[in-house]
Amino acid sequence: MLKKLFHFFVFLFAAAIPLLGLTGCQTTYHQRDFATLIPKTITQDWGVAVDQFKLENGNAGVLIRLDSIWDNQGKLTPAAQSIILGCSRSIEKILVSSDATAKVISVTATTADYFNNVYFERSYSKIRQSRAGAISAKDLYKDDQFKLVPDWQWGPFSDNYVYYPNYSFSQIQALIETRALAQYGLNVKSEIDGDKWLVYTRVSRLLDNNVLAVDISDKMLNILNATEVIATKVDHPPASISVTAIGGDTDLNSTYTDSMDNLRAQMNGKLTREQRRNLIQESTQAFYLNVLGKPISMLALPELTNFATTQIQVNLKNMPAISVQAGQFVIALKLSSNDYATLLNHNDILLNALKPIWRLVLLAQDKVSLLSLSLTAGDGRNSCLSFDPTALINYFKNVMTADQLFSQSKSLASCPLMAPKQ
Image: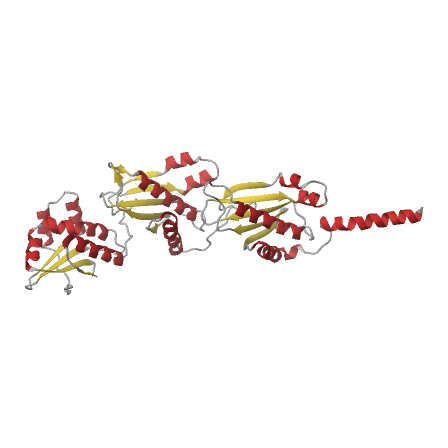
């Protein structure tokens, strides 16, 4: 009888050995090594770098960065879901063979181009039950949770996660401008004023039947959205973001301004998307002023020079020499005697040639105090016409006549000496 009992217990012990291995009773790994071991294992298993790892309050969690998480409909992509579940399994295989205790395993995935992170968690006790054969895989998976959380939230561990830590504003500008070009094909410039981010873009046509064109409005909202995604991921987000579109068909610009508080309220479920859209402020200013009433600074002088050269060639059929000296933007032309006389005696020709250039001079990053036109005839005669910003603006607003504008130009400083191209 004793011999039979002995063989029975030997059989039970032998049968239990695999079960002990499955349920993690063998200690292969130690919790003290998790901070390096788990990220290293996930990278080896899935080719994903782990941004952060924690084991806190029974939650063994990692945060990973993925190039893409969401499809065009805002749904989790199969590839992202596969990686998230894979990372969970990598944590699991270490945890079950360690001296650590946990309640859940979690993976938070974040990406650069979306407001939300995705948070996944799985019950660790159910994992152990499934490994022991006490519940089916179906019972284990049915309670899996994928949750959308704001992109500053890392699961239960932190509400202050920063995707772009310690970024300077020049680095942020590069992000804004690169993303607007890559996602929407739009060239933008940006600047910061206190706690406000200001973004500018130029379009050929701003209005449709004297109201903001629908396609331009959509582009502005897209730029605003892309900039706000970046703003939620930096150390010191702005209080507001403004996007201003400047058109070639009107002397007024159009601006959308959104509060970051309203954005956070939507992301926290306190405002609907439509409610927040209705809170975005719309405003107009003179085309060269931003929403704060300050001069817009968006064009570098090389851009301005190239544009002016093209406009003069188109409008006056002449190749100019252009320079910027002591705040004067000087356009020098070498003309035939007949063309010289024509330009001096027909104000409308000169002003039509100058107007598109002066519009952009007002948007220059390096401010220009005078727009000057140096005319040299083939017989050596020379004239210089210099216009200050106020006079030109008043003319364009029909506050001043062409004769008054040209009369004022004679009393202004003469053009710097320069040799026009032949």
